[in-house]
Image 1 (cartoon, rainbow, N blue to C red):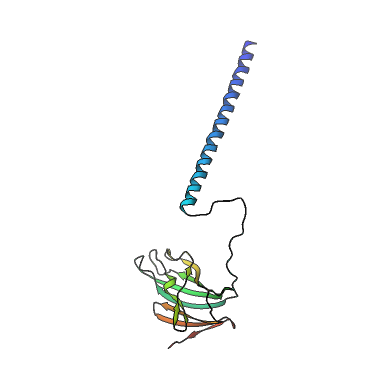
Image 2: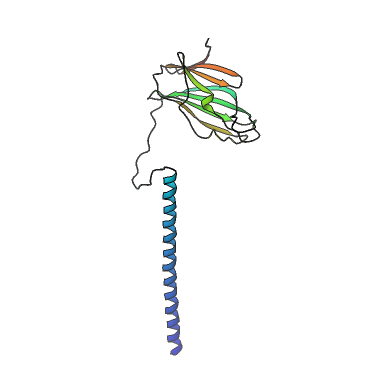
Length: 197
């Protein structure tokens, strides 16, 4: 009988230790989770990101894009001098679109098949729109062109600020072999090489 009481006491003591252990583990995990949440909050503040909220607000949408003009304009550009050695980059203009707000969006693909090391491309230096005597430069370039791995391909967009562009725009492309001009007509959804002079 004494051994049975002793076993019950040992079992109760073991159960008490188990409950204290579970409670301690729970407190430890809660503390660690609060520390991670605090670190995320600090990181968000340092990166100027909006705080996380429970409400689901729809993301800002870009203005509607009219159907673009598919193109196959290909040229070679020299990579940015910011990363050496410089290399030839094959650039293809795959589409030109006009948004409802009047901005012009170029879809491009850059291929680094000849590069032996990481390179970079500066699309804002390659493309401009000609409007009368004025030369209009891109207002935005999508990310991904500032660090191109060798033997890789990256696609993105080049955007020109909304303007009173007519249904026809002249695009100037400054490639490795000089400048070329293309006329894009959004009314007929066609393009052709143009000569200015």
